[in-house]
Image 1 (cartoon, rainbow, N blue to C red):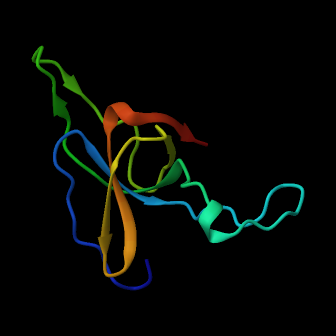
Image 2 (cartoon, rainbow, N blue to C red; image 1 turned 120 degrees about the horizontal axis):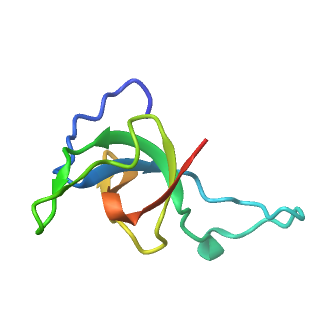
Length: 100
């Protein structure tokens, strides 16, 4: 992200994620062309929205905090581009795991 601070606060129930870079090479050493790259399903949490209030009246707390690396659902999240860099807003419920 460089020295420029990203000034976004997700709405309740969402995390702002900086996606991990797609692998350019397989474990066996084969280099992949850009057209075959699959979007990563993990990234670093940059910002956390407030607790989500569910229809039942209960609250859902964030499964991760700022700085955590997470794995999220393959088709989860909404991509946004800011200053040429891609970010993803992911719902709390779309987080599958916190790494580490």
